[in-house]
Image (cartoon, rainbow, N blue to C red; front, side):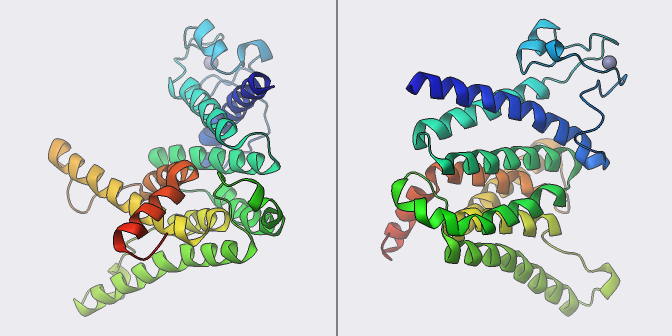
Amino acid sequence: MEIMGAVFALGLGAIVGSFLNVCIHRLPLGRSIVRPRSCCPDCGAPIAWHDNLPILSWVRLHGRCRACGWRIPVRYPLVEAATALLFLLLFKSRGPTPLLLQEMALGAALIALILIDARHQILPNAITLPGIAVGLLTSPVRGAFDALHPASPLVALRESIQGAAIGFAIPFGINAAYRGWQALRGVPVERREDGIGQGDFKLLAMIGASLGTRLVLFCLFAGAVSGALFGLYMMWRHGYGWKSKLPYGVFLGGAALLALFVGEPAVAWYRGLLGVGP
Ligand SMILES: [Zn+2]
């Protein structure tokens, strides 16, 4: 049973990962994710089902399109493998529960957002807005399951609304303060900039709607620290300037994936450090 479940989680993850590859390629281009069916992004030739098996087909075709020989980026099998691994880890730590499917969906959405933000510096509404809605609308049902699954960080209704609101309000407040500071320095209105992009607001609201206030704060903090370290590294090694834009969504999304497993213990540890209880 345990083995069957693990194999199912791996297989489902690989198939979902294959679909994520389609989303990552097509959503930023504003194209449909269902039509046309799978085709080579380079030559447009349709891909037969036996050439479209997650990971396996990439290996068997030596990473090339059968029709045109286009080199299929290694990102494709990596996304499939990463999603499969994520689903396996979720299954291992939660067991077969109805909430597991929602955590898998959240994890899959985060993987897609991370890769799209890394490549295009955008976080499509087509993922974040449904993500917020699912987090909020399923929260009353989750309330009933919570006690059964201590390993799951999903929250019930009140926490879900609060988490989404705070996830949205904090970056909004940071931007308002940043614009105020620019106004004080005499920057004209049309040249004032936001510190945090609109997509990041919605990503944080999506995280909050599923994981609640404590883990939104965890993601803001972990995302800011890892983003700053990455920024310093890029300045040191690659001569990036202070004004270079970082895809903050990559770091927020990474922190949210981490939060699915170690968020609660990390927050409890930090609160213990401050002496404010768990
Ligand atoms: Zn091709």
